[in-house]
Length: 533
Image 1 (tube, rainbow, N blue to C red):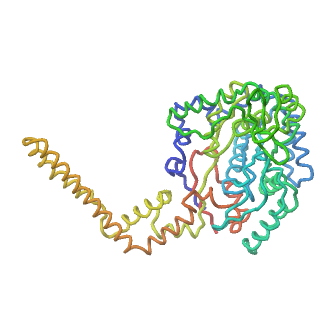
Image 2 (image 1 turned 120 degrees about the vertical axis):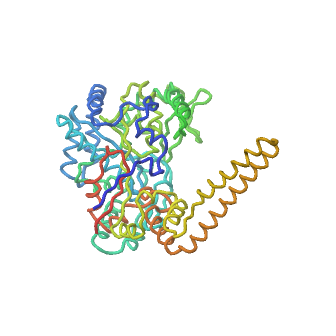
Image 3 (image 1 turned 180 degrees about the horizontal axis):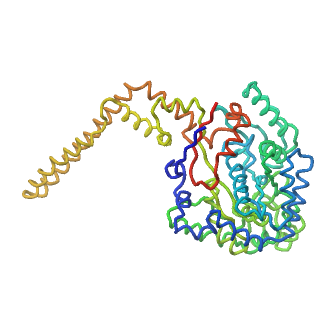
């Protein structure tokens, strides 16, 4: 097995905000609480211990036991659920949508980063216990984002009427998806395992939340992963005071807007914008915004309205009907869990950076923020191709046209670089400028125009020579293009496009165990990994 590290900034696939955060730039310190170094976790856990109520633990554990009832899982996971009752136990959390069959490959990286960090923390702080949490986004309603996964360049899609929280969706129609992937996966030991996992998850459960819990448990049960579905009345009751504040005072809007403006001033784009009320209303298969107009609380695009007393009574009696949006969901998570750190992708961390002032205002400890592991996975066969084509790993991260131009210039037997000719031309024009100085300004302008024209002419000739060499080296270019397209499908990172099943068919359980044993959540680098056959 071969492992190579590349700085996130050097991949060019990550935003300046994330790269600056990884570089610990001073101007970002006001947007987060503590930087995720091992030594900073001691202060974080002490603060969380002081600010996290015991009765929240009781509700969390009781709910988890109900949700895990009947699920075949590991003793380690059951132990972790029991440990959550103790005030010396803390969580490390990642969250993800309920993507069909996990969706993009980075689902694995998120959870492995979370599991590995808990193990590192246990070694560093042995008096405490740390539980890896996968927070299922069961209340999300963006069905079109989750109803498919990519397999070998094709989209395997679930057709189902959308509406409401996706976790509540029934699993009708997934038998048809199973028929498609049965053919796509083929035969063999690993294919049989994958089909069994899919069948048991999606064809033997009635809703998408239960199906996803089964799937994640099947993949990570041996590592003690605990899966949380927070879409319950018991858990929402813990969040009622914050939802009441949101309805009556609109604190999130007041506190997040200045933070987004500050990010803009530093040149960073805003990931999400808060609404005046950042709550949805769940009812009869729909999830719609709550707005305030004409002294009434209104469910957008419906006839449902309340006055102040009515909506508060409804909130206290039926908290499960109220659902936090992307701005409030992080707060709900941190109220519910004894959490120290959230692990997410670049886009997720970008919206967490908008929330620090909001957390401070409502007096909830802001978690440490850690970028999940990212990786590019090679087969041994692909690694050999790379060597034969004399390609460095870092070169693969160039955009496709830059990559090909770079390699053509490198392998051509004719130099495709007119830089020396341009320097020579500029030296010749220097004497012309001396003449121009003792004549008039119009002649100096004519010299300048001629210099620009001739330099442009050299650029044109260089491009034509490059084009001619591309034709001559078309076979090598085709091989280079094929290799880059295999590793960067749709000209994007592998992890954002491919599904884990493609690799599992080849490597089986070795896929997850190798990633688990290789990825370091605190490395701060992008990982390139070659799998042995």
